Image 1 (spheres, rainbow over the protein chains, first blue to last red):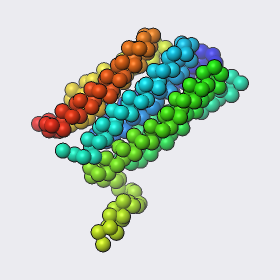
Image 2 (cartoon, rainbow over the protein chains, first blue to last red):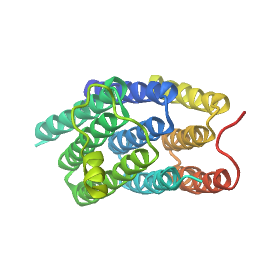
Image 3 (cartoon, chains in turn yellow, cyan, orange):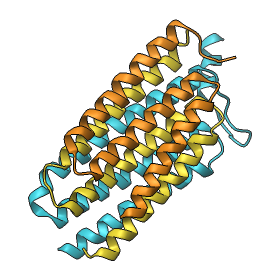
Image 4 (cartoon, chains in turn cyan, brown, purple):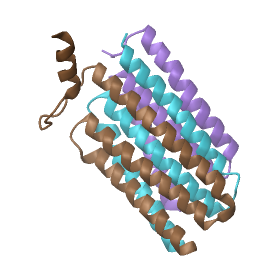
Length: 86
Length: 109
Length: 79
């Protein structure tokens, strides 16, 4: 896996994060923004695994695991608030 | 073996990009949830498994991350969809069928 | 690689500025959640995975839950 392929993969993922970030900035309701943050989180998990391969450290895979778990908890808190109202 | 891993990772990265593109492009919240969950779950699964095939010592931990994302991502998207339906966000103009409203009308009748 | 780090910094700044300008406070909480998630990736780039884990857990889960409870006790829209 040489340098060029890694740059292309990371560039595609960064472009995807840019598109979702635009949706998070212009989204009409709060649900749109929550969906955009959910998608960015799942995209970044893939990015972190590729970066762990680039840096060649086994222990860096733990960060991806913790990242997916904790973003899930935060989004569930937001969704529970939106469902119940005041 | 490394070529197979690179191809699988490339498929996963392409699906991640397309899922994010759907987030920007589709008309209302429910369509965006559909693009943002299906495409990114598939894409993350293939990306992580591809890295696990390239480095065979990492395979089991990569499989653990992939299974974990496959469990948590549909739950959070389901919670957001249910919350936005209950808080009264309308569907877009071009949508054809709304089965929850039909179900509620049948319950009331 | 430096281009991707610059992009992440710009994205983090855009999320932070948007958290200042939103009138719906729940959207502002979501934007601040986004800031912590991107800051965790930047710590990962600096070869500090433990700090990245702490930032993700505190910033994304705990602070979001505390702010949501605070909005529930007060009101959601800013005048």
